[in-house]
Image 1 (tube, rainbow, N blue to C red):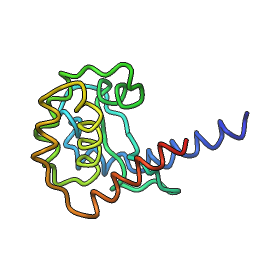
Image 2 (image 1 turned 30 degrees about the vertical axis):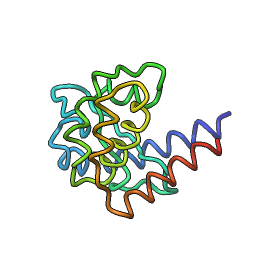
Image 3 (image 1 turned 90 degrees about the vertical axis):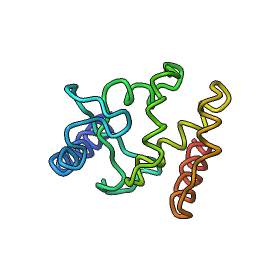
Image 4 (image 1 turned 45 degrees about the horizontal axis):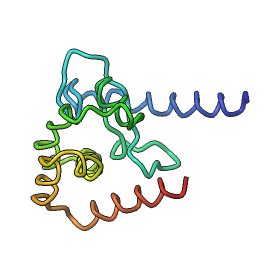
Length: 138
């Protein structure tokens, strides 16, 4: 049990090293919903690399972070922010936006409509598919 805890703490330390760069990039706002004035948490975008990478991390508000980690707690209306996020120049934000829209498409017509409008660069589409395949293996 201690080894798992130690590994987790080491991973958190590595992620904290990215903190300043992430905060600068995010301009102290949630990179999905643009909430500001709240505590932001680093979220690693699946598939998670062996070593933390700036391009595979997002800074998220408590609402986005919680709902991504606990899909049963998803509040559909919160994710209307994806209308803008799906066009982000940040690939990690696009990946999460499209994955969330795919999840919400059965529950909300607006999400299905946004998915129809989405255009993805081939490498982004490939990353989304890799993340979905990785989750199915768990």
